[in-house]
Length: 568
Image (cartoon, rainbow, N blue to C red; front, top):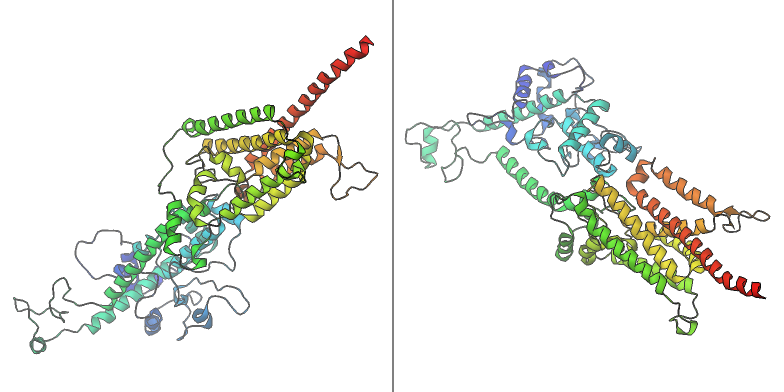
């Protein structure tokens, strides 16, 4: 524990004794006693702690005025109205006597003037939690250190969905970078709670036999009067009556039961956000931002949420072979389609006035846009999570094809469809509809299968991915490779007499960009780079096959002409 030099030994013996008891709360108690552990909570005791601090301050012999300066008899403006100062910063509390009256264990306290950045969070926790939840956890742990409830089992047992390892990392980080005298704060808290018990005992004055007879209260058969016996003996009620402390404990338990139920319902929805996702998958939104959900929407959300506590116990082969078989069958079907397709005549097309390239690519963009809009309806979340989202923990073979048309974030959709329109129409004009669709869908399937294989082999069960990125990269790779020695201009740049940038330069730029993603923690946690490289490689291979097939067809057409010329 990293604490300052002032410890519990600086307090009077009553505080040392209370702190000694706090360190032994986990030991079994042989006799029933009234002890503060029953009502330790994230809020001060019913009698406000500052009253006891002000009343007993004169009896303390403390040498450090920095840690325990005399509190004001009234709460400060920052404590009454919030934790931000006039200049917009945050007040960082480190001492128990500064604890604001509106402090709660769930909200915690600010430990620094601003939240940690994602890269700082990654350095502390790794990839298993995002910046929002990490900062919230750090605030909860820092609040417990200041409130003196860090070792209180009734408070420390509240996990709020965080794992033991995450809480230990948060505590270690705070102790290393934001020192707080936890022993002193725990001692002050114990002293306030002992003072509250003393006040309750002072109010529970013994009653004489005459007073009990006047109230017609039956006495014990032995004739002895209990010291704290005040009320009538009723079934299932304590003879001591309901104290303020007991009422506070009951209220806190009821609140915690309701909060625990709410956290359990949200745990499955927030698990993906806490652990991070691969691919540009939109994090789960916080339901509290939209108010109370209707029962129908809650039912849809429940049906779309898996009730599995952990991934099924399957080997890598058992997870991969159904999807691999599905991909191979589809690739074979696409090959048959490419060889047997015959383009329709102009008067036989549905939209003869629209160029074939625009019609094909436009149809793909329209389909992706409709699926993106359908994600906004919670009633569709259950089937979409099964068939339009790749999850290596519970793989669905059809999801490898469906995820190719699925986007949750509009930015992800706009980028993919923008590149598809620019490059897809050019590639379609070069190779035709059948080869373009075979190349596009085949590259997407190869990219999805490669990505899921990586996740399964690395056992990254908390990952999910979706999007047309692999298929789009396949179209980019094929076009750039087929025109690797041709010059290209973007919006007229570079101007003549320059021939423009070669296709191989564009291809190298795309590869270098994705390599840079591997060195960025933020990009690596949001972008499925594996599918990008797999789709790009599949596109380049398909482009090379198309070029060789064109050369073979050209030679086949030239041979009869050469024979006729030789005869002449």
